[in-house]
Length: 328
Image (cartoon, rainbow, N blue to C red; front, top):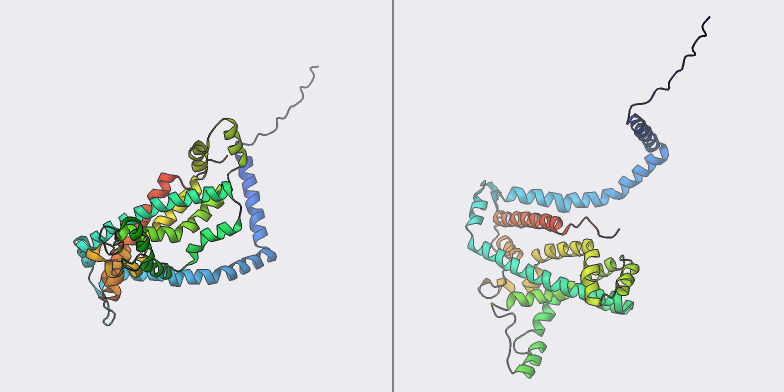
């Protein structure tokens, strides 16, 4: 009699990925049950309680003015009369407005000077603070101009640069024998305003870059020195690449702030200066809105400025790879 062959059962093998899907489902159920617990419900209520004031302020002071401005850009609105829908008339006028395009050119010139000069000196100042000094007093002095109001800074610098009695011109006259029309010249107006803006914002940018420098490991610098690298090569090959995310953020913030400059220009060079040499776009928008009371056309220019800033910021973030870091 032949022996019976024992029956061998093979364990069932789960299809690939089913275990991970089951793990994800169980984790999701665990999170759902944890979030629905009374303790977490109290956390959510507290979170909404803390977020609500900022959210309400954002909706009232940011979202609503933006939507209102978009609507007014398609209307004719002069405050004392109700807004009248005109469609794309304001945008057609904008395309053929020579003063608007001149303001765009002046603004771009101002932004380029402010960003290039400002970032250069801010980076040098941050590196000096990081490598040569740890004094909090020096850091406070560097940050001090940023704490001064733009109107106050503009008034002080306009007095100092005055062609006859300004202390800067007195010194230059002693050195060269000539007076300089810094704010009264069409060629020097924007460079002068840009330098004042750089002086005011350089400390804040330097502090941001200084914070970024502290994130770079010191081992990297020590290894570079052991390989015989000098200070200039270390700065070009190590400091700048590793500082790129913070540097990109500072550049973007500087560009946005420079495009929106108003107070300094209005104080040191009111009404756009000689031959509209310093008539930046925010100043032209202000003149249209609060001097001519043409809020519809002023809203159109504001929307154009907003779109330009969106496009420039997007391009900067893509070109500088602001979200990536070389630190591993």
